[in-house]
Length: 261
Image 1 (cartoon, helix red, strand yellow):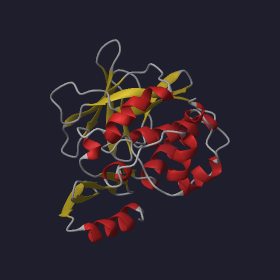
Image 2 (spheres, rainbow, N blue to C red; image 1 turned 90 degrees about the vertical axis):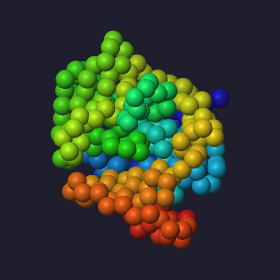
Image 3 (cartoon, helix red, strand yellow; image 1 turned 135 degrees about the horizontal axis):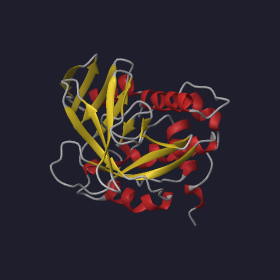
């Protein structure tokens, strides 16, 4: 019944070409870091199907491949991290999904509404993510209490919260320590995300049905649309402009996020 949630990527080389990469002979940490960074720079986080077109979101691998690779679209966490996890498996990595709760800018315990990735390499576990619409590590982060790593000029930290949950934090441009999300390392099944995906994509109380969330990494920083605000971050400096109308919105999507409608 759920076979296509677990299908192999139809064409690994086409997926890698979408990222501007070629296949590696060895599924090691260096290549994994390269894959993650390239994915964040090539494939936008975007909720246009949810917010603009009001479409149902499929998590079946063949449909995700069509949308993200062949149609050169983006997606949100349940789509991007699902397809990327399967790519990692097909490339020989031991990868599996994990449950996360986004705690950034929250003073309460939020529900679990994010899908992350755990990769086991040489008996160590690493947190990976190519599907978060905010500040995510541009590479692997070792899941070890007190561990910190600087990747492409950004520093991220891992803290153990209790016997089950881990915290991902980052150092902001002002030097402050900011909590990003919490996750646990117990492997999840792909079917476990069907209900969460349905809520996030269809419920009127979901943030994704209420306004645009679009984000892509660049070599100098990032570009994002939140609602009707377009922000470019370059070398730590942010500039924001308000989007006047749908015509300008479509121009920005094509010019800055490579999304054409």
